[in-house]
Length: 499
Image (cartoon, rainbow, N blue to C red; front, top):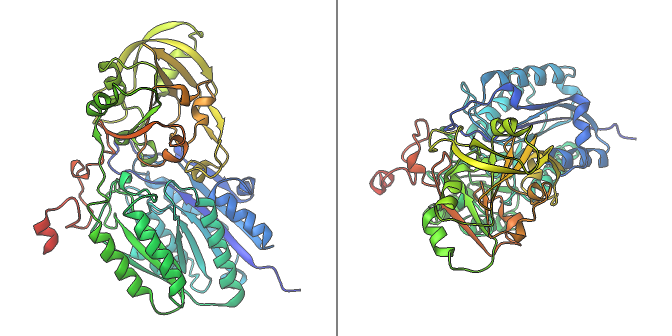
């Protein structure tokens, strides 16, 4: 009987919004050390899929550690250094000669104060500081990764999600594990070729159901089937709210020799032709509310992209709520991440009314807290099981999410769900766990750009991307980029881009 293949597995997952005011501390990360990772086997997360495959393949799996946090501001340096210390110490229990491969479940857009390319630095340290130059290392990346030359140089293979919303995150990890198994068993030598572009798209322009991403993904799939030696082609939309030299649209090709450069050139050229198509921005909220005022029924879903929690925004912006009040909208619902308000309402019984300030504390772009008289409708522990185990949210948390202590309040027939933890609005279970069926409402506000659509499109009469004050505005020219490579579309003039 052949000896079992020894595989080291680790995860590091954070999408960093460098324009958000508050940094992300160590306490914001959930760490799973060693065998604690095995609790994720078979759940809906990418890590769960990878661990399940490892069991099916009968690998001698050695789980190192996993660290993850909801998208937020620049990560404190202590987080990565703690991660690396644990990673190095745990991996050093073996010599490279005793290890057959490594599988890394990454995001690809993590930034600390001292390091703008955390995933690239992690891979460099494995190769250069640990000195592990022989084993195949396969990395899983989010579709919104800001992929760097350093990542491509030190990974044997990089595989990105193909769907946005990220319904295939778990499947991508499984696909990565199968490739690693192939490399370990056959000794095949592969490399990752990479190409960046001079394009940065806001999140709303990166959905894969429509152009430009749909067309680029189609080119990638066709190249995989028609190009000998090409194993995997990935299209990365990039994460526009990270100010790094590598921010933007890019592509990678995993290959065993030949063909990669022509594919990268074709993808980069087509992306440039479609650059304006991907530059999607929201419409002024007052304009949208006027347009739908005479329309019967609902729900109309208003996506407040500027306060996109999945993009790292604080989730307490008051722009949409203020607009609903200005237009005297009824039978509407919005959610605010406001632990301070939750704490103040903790002792108010259901049916009780009080006056307090809501939201507006997390970003200097917002007008500030909005003071309202509210009636408490429900108290909740904030835990809900995901209705959709293939949702974008599942790629972050697995099967369930913890909003923390949460309270549903009402003001002038507008329901306001106050949560202690920022909760990406990607699953209807968020509302149903507090007794609200969003399908029965007139308007539902979500703090998202694209990732909410898998959950809300089936119930929505209309879906509108709105512009309100906030750090995730689709107009990227409002952001003060300092490190991104220039010139770049759409930040610079046509004259500068033509030079």
